[in-house]
Length: 295
Image 1: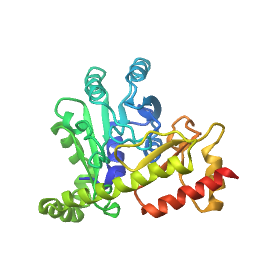
Image 2: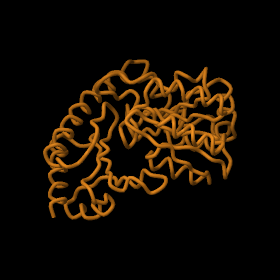
Image 3: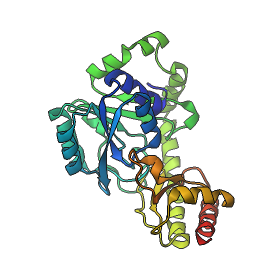
């Protein structure tokens, strides 16, 4: 158990990397993960993505250019793009993790939140055959304030994780909350909560999809099949960071795309979340954004 994905990711960096090591990340990727990597003074190298996830041709090129310690990716309903790595690419990626001796750190927090076809098996399923550490969290499927997550990997890596000074001294991470959540799992309440969330989020996703087409018809995006986010490309010539500042006057907000880039890219993209607000508020937000764009 961990104190959420952030705590798990920080622990993995502490135990499996050293300052100056090279790591690979998706381009774009979760912006707060980039901050954790920079806190550990790691050299970040981006790998291209497309609608099917990590582009393996670009990964192969990067593996020839450097010897990374790990690859961090969000394989299912990625943050921010919503894309999902195909099964074929997962299989190939796991093979390369062994042949090129790098660690796959899979952030799989959205894997249970699918609103369409079931995603491919998680990278956690490869823990006994590949060089994989899978990180999960109850923050997306139970309650954000719990700050409780988990790491799933092979026995050798688990032994290294549980034997480290931090866990040995503290007796584990968040043990009291862990006991509560265990009861919730065993009672079946977690499964029921996930089913409820899927129903709610699927409805909100549908509203945002419809309203984007109505109020921002010149934007470009792919409708996500799970997770929390729409990754929207703005009309030509618009900068999301400048629009974000302008949108404050309309009391509407979003994440600008450049925050998710390790190289300052995606400046014409914005990330919109449908998970928090009711359908009526989603519609109101997009109407305000439309007015902002018209001025």
